[in-house]
Amino acid sequence: MPDQSDDRPYHHGSLRIALLDAAERGLRAHGADQLSLRDLAREIGVSHAAPRRHFPDRQALLDALAEAGFARLDNALRTALKTADDFPGRVRAAATAYTRFATENSALLELMYTSKHRPGASRIVQAAEAPFGLMNDLIVEGQEQGALQDGPPQRIGVVLFATLQGIATLGNGDLVPAELLDGLVETAVEQFLRGARP
Image (cartoon, rainbow, N blue to C red; front, side, top):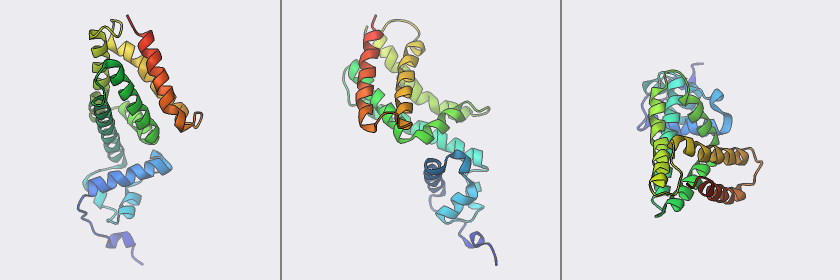
């Protein structure tokens, strides 16, 4: 009996998007190690060879997921920053947006960060520059307004980032109930702004 996947259509109207969507669902459910181009092709109803038009191998698919994740994070942060007028409000909005992204997309975020440090991942590093650059600009904004101490913005920003990442990790590990996360972020931002004043 012939393999049924051989009878499936090769073409799909938006194959790349469908593969990335299916891959992200698989990432959430089973982790990156379990993703397979053949299984994804079966899931979306195309031949097993069809995904190779967009992703020559599994690593290319994972890299595309990581790039898309950084673009989504950047969009979430930019959208959040537009909701506040003053510097403390902008920090609060960005911190809340980051933590929500990190807890709602924990498997994707892990993939994003691990992929960024893989040799040859220059496109992922470039994709990461947008959201990290945005946060760096926010720290510089605070320094220029006199709300944050002078010094290397990255050094000041990493304290906030590490705190938010820690809160997200506690939430993702079910060590803190989800309904408490926004309050923890609020407290963390208040303490950061107070502690980083000139």
